[in-house]
Amino acid sequence: MENLNNLKDQFKKIFTKDCESIFFSPGRVNLIGEHTDYNGGNVFPCALTIGTYGLVSKRDDKKCLVSSLNFQDLGVIEFDLDNLINDKSHDWANYPKGVIKTFKDHNFVASHGFEILFFGNIPNGSGLSSSASIEVLMGTILNESFNFNIDMVDVVKMCQEAENKFIGVNCGIMDQFSIGMGKKDCAILLDCNTLNYTYSKLNMDGYKIVIGNTNKKRGLADSKYNERRSECETALKEIQKYKNINSLGELTESDFEEVKCHISDPIKAKRAKHAVYENARTLNAVKALENNNLVLFGKLMNESHISLRDDYEVTGIELDTLVSLAWECDGVVGSRMTGAGFGGCTVSIVKEDCVDKFISSITPKYTEKIGYEPSFYIVSISDGTRKLS
Image (cartoon, rainbow, N blue to C red):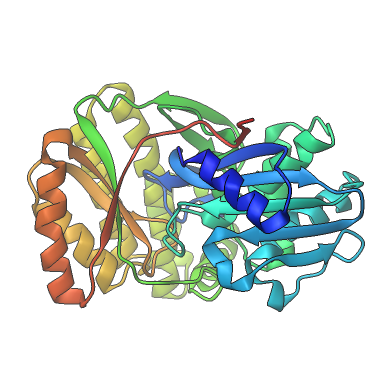
């Protein structure tokens, strides 16, 4: 938990008044099930203890004044509730603005503006979903401030819509869902086709989740994310001529082996194979956890990374280096890239008494090969977005 008194002081300094309420929205890490969400498959994310804070006071007019301690050089950004457009010069503030606009489109209209100070301790561009964290934070601020009484799943859907339509990133539902619906010490098995979900308690006694940040900056919108998505959509269309399905997530591994011959492009066949096999791996991983078989869970994490590297081709030298170094370390149950790829982070499950050695042995080897240091975060699993005070 950040020093809230320090954040309150900063709020007063910027807006020359006291804040009225404080909200927190976690980041998320996906333990397994990558690039399956928009293919109608299952994902297995959890919310983290690092995230985004929002300090809020209400205004009497229709103006919103927002500032972020993460982008102090941009100062206070001002926009009007009657003119909610994506303005490039507003940079990060387009995320909360897009949520306000999407709520308005669904007839949840903010009747007054706010002053809001944001502060996130999620590393920027790390793939731990700082954008979804700020979106669900803004959705929760609106829901609480105006007593809209919107169910969190609907808040989550509107936040995803804001990112898709207002920001223009074709993301799936996983990020917003795991951030809004997170539960302490649990991961969420989410079927992205139906939004059916179950919580799985993670028994991490003696183990830690360690996030490794490659420190390679990447932007989701300009990564090859949309390209991979359309490759899968093309493969699906070709399969649909022979099999009655709505998404790749409906296929079992043996189903896929029967129909893959109908995918004309071998590259697109590899992409679809990843989506189908990763979905199966995710379901097997959850079963392994339920049987307290962390070793099998780790093995499936490793297989997930190999598939993302070879079939989906979204890893790159930084992620591959960080993961292969992790695989060599004592006490590592499993390690894989997490998030969209092309930089960002890895997630590893490491024996608690091996964590220090894990970090100290990987850091110099990665630095020597890549040319700059990685960063590591030992994280715990948190509840979802909520009002703190």
